[in-house]
Image 1 (cartoon, rainbow, N blue to C red):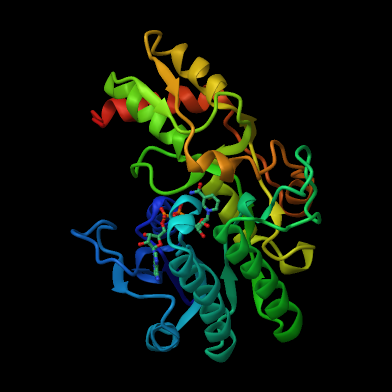
Image 2 (tube, helix red, strand yellow):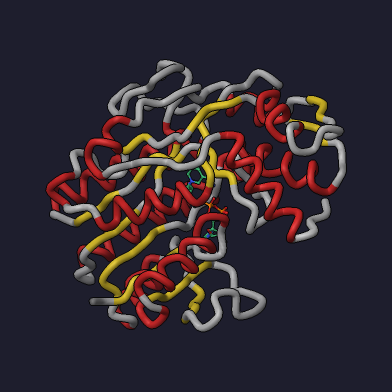
Length: 317
Ligand SMILES: NC(=O)c1ccc[n+]([C@@H]2O[C@H](COP(=O)([O-])OP(=O)(O)OC[C@H]3O[C@@H](n4cnc5c(N)ncnc54)[C@H](O)[C@@H]3O)[C@@H](O)[C@H]2O)c1
């Protein structure tokens, strides 16, 4: 058993992933890294290091010096932030992934797990029941860099035999970290406002349907694909994932079943343009067939769990 490096470990997904895998595989096997330095011992006892994935030398050294055998590459610049900072998105998402793959082969890493995204789709992609192999011509810098990451991953697997695997995440909803810079983060923000007793102004139109998933199912999926036998995987990091699709109005209705006086109004901004290029629903059969994708939460059970946990955290906005 070797050592697992997590990049971007202070992000929405990385934070919860480190906690989960340190419980599952042992704290001493995990090294949590991020370009930011944590303010306190966030992972209680897990070793943390500062690592900028856009710095090739630093990525090689981190892998070599810590005898890393496996990597969860979670560092990234999400869609809304990427549109405001395209150069940063390119350096982190495209160059950073190249650095991790290149160091992976040079430093003898056994396995690399990389999340892709529904951001790889674009206006020419079909809107419903989108298959794994389809038109991927995104119009956002986030999408451009994540298609690059998909193609690089497949190339390194085919050309060098590097075991790279991963999923195309939809919008991920969770309560442990505040909403960040993704286009689907309105959903997280809506729960925060509802529990804080505030009205929410949504930056997407009320009928914008997007694929989504609750964090426990997102983590469970990543562990499933990480542990899957390599010979079962037809695809590299292109497995479509989605537990359900909804629009802001439907989410509002689901939350209102628990918090009846919660109010939402709509003021679409530049993120509407990003959302308009993404599909409404995805075909997830390849993930089901190849490694047993099986989400447990539907919209209302997610709403009940989100509200319960945010109430316990006494969140304010
Ligand atoms: N959250 C979602 O809804 C979602 C959906 C689809 C795909 N994804 C993918 O999952 C991955 C993780 O997303 P997330 O939601 O946790 O994002 P996040 O923005 O919450 O976290 C990303 C982390 O990466 C770190 N980071 C930024 N630049 C870095 C650099 N140069 N070197 C090292 N670390 C750096 C940030 O400090 C942050 O902690 C990304 O690849 C993203 O594309 C996320």
